[in-house]
Image 1 (cartoon, rainbow, N blue to C red):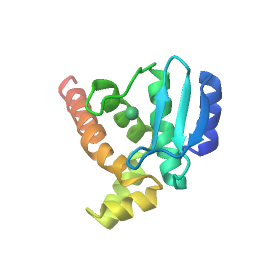
Image 2 (image 1 turned 135 degrees about the horizontal axis):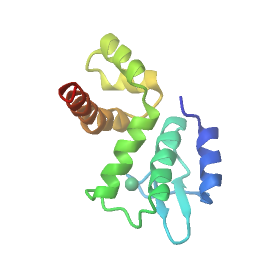
Image 3 (image 1 turned 180 degrees about the vertical axis):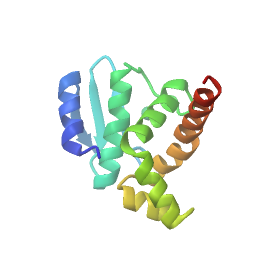
Image 4 (image 1 turned 90 degrees about the vertical axis):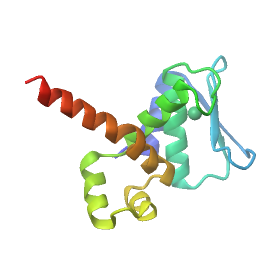
Length: 138
Ligand SMILES: [Zn+2]
């Protein structure tokens, strides 16, 4: 399980500075590339903070400049965030227990609902495809 401390250390290694500021509704955070600054909304819950920080750190890792909501860097950041914050075995156990109840799965795995949705839409299909290729190549 990734902790906020892990992420703060990672930010330091990347040479990224964190600032907190009240952001307009609907915005949790953003990354400014040339300045290497991550700005996070100051009103985030603990879970939102962890998920947003992980997401923005991935933009920083890939040196993504600007963030269009449908662009490739944004999808990559969402996919990477979900795959780093969620463990497949834990996810599978939760899905067994709560079936399609996103809210409870998110609560149990300590991430936001968005991250669970991204895990289902962006991470799992890729994993299944890879598994399939693996089986076919044997
Ligand atoms: Zn983003």
